[in-house]
Image (cartoon, rainbow, N blue to C red; front, side, top):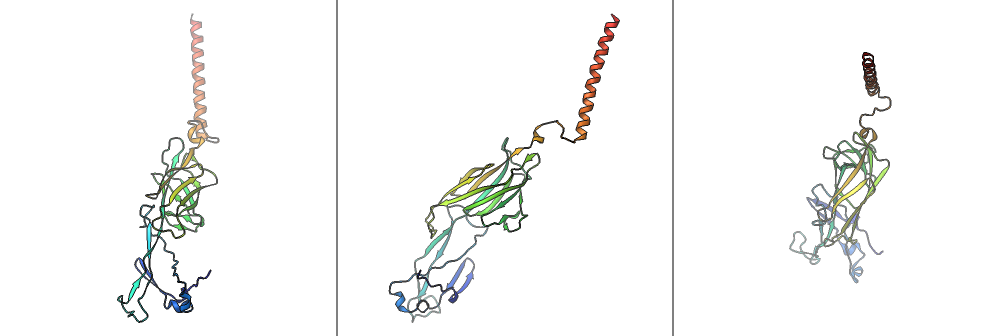
Length: 272
């Protein structure tokens, strides 16, 4: 209430990691000098997506410095810096985390390769193999030899995990499971001096192993149960003709041995 949006009157230029918003005459934009009798505040609201080189965790964060630069007087030379002054900096800080999902066997915690997972953030985007987020409903990621899937630049929020296909010899979990990353201790300004507390929770068969807010490293295990076929040994599957034939031949061999023993024993009695 009481704010005046002057975005349309501003010019914006970007130079590397710095962007400048040139406002023009603020006194005129706000309706004249009388509007400043009780003071005035200028606020810049902007989106700055984090790149792959961003800092993870709260130890460093990703600070943003904002200040207002203005002429010393209406009569100052505005062609250079000599006639300008600036307000003290107002710093904001963006925090992000790195999330590692590891596919493991529930029997011995061994990392598993070949699991296909669909990971969805709370904006409906799906993680792709190159680590970016997509709206492609068929997108998924596959665990490598170390069983890992890496998510970089994770914001606080709720993430959904589905298992599209389990590794060979294991049973995929059904339905969807959620991972919730919560950051507490940030005020609305996200000031740089804030040190948020990070908590992580996950639904079974997902397991939280580590959550280090300082380094921003979060590690979870996705557990898979060995399938019945993999754990029952030499028993043939229904319709497996090769194993059935082997079992039948083995049974015939046992029967022949038993008959031979009976005949031999019987023959021995007749000799006596």
